[in-house]
Image (cartoon, rainbow, N blue to C red):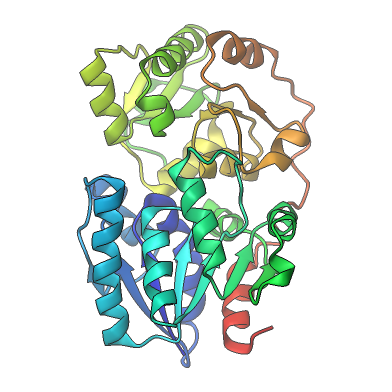
Length: 356
């Protein structure tokens, strides 16, 4: 069996690593990795292949820094050529990026089976490019590997029981990754220079809805600056966010550092006090490492974490952020098995081989 894996954005590298590790142990499964190049910064791409112990990509398309349409179109054309050349049994896509949609669409039009990992997520905000990508990808896939029962319920509510599409709750490959790589967590070289204990807040900002809106960006930055006065804030700065801050002349008075590798991010998550993020993946990883996350968005795909009281939606509102930060309690349970037993990758590969 040959699987053609399409990755391109940071979270997809982490998800793919768990499955690549399973495939490498099997003599009857071959994986061909296509890296679209969607994340082109060395600190946000090359380092992952090194850290995650997965093979270098067989193809690197180097498609980045374009509009959504141009990026997706060029990826679609290039991936189609690769599929025709490689003739895989499956094309596997992850998450909700332009790379996801391009890979799924190229395969579907060539009648190659599509496996969508992390399927069924919904923010119910159609203004999000990610929401559009995930809905379209789900509809043209052969099998949908869902990370939670909530994701399965979303698909059932959309009528997927009537479609000739397999819906399988396998658990979350990100939980697999957190369990496996926790023991390999690496302290960033710069952390000792900051002379911090475990009492720091970890922040990430990258979504266009925040970085492209001056009012929202100002509210978030003001909140982080205020929090930093009493609890040190560390922000690994996304390249796009950095450009926006410089262009808008918005000043951060916190500990701003370069983007970190996954193993460094795991260390920071394990040792922080709280997380503030607009990332879908980071808010969930915070839960894996038993930390609350203030979600800098108006909605979340991981609603179960809000319902259990671990995470809190605060948007980009200074007052809401500060009130929730100041009132965070300590009696939160992080023991619910929302995301499976840490064997999602094994279940996925087994299903692709046997259909069950």
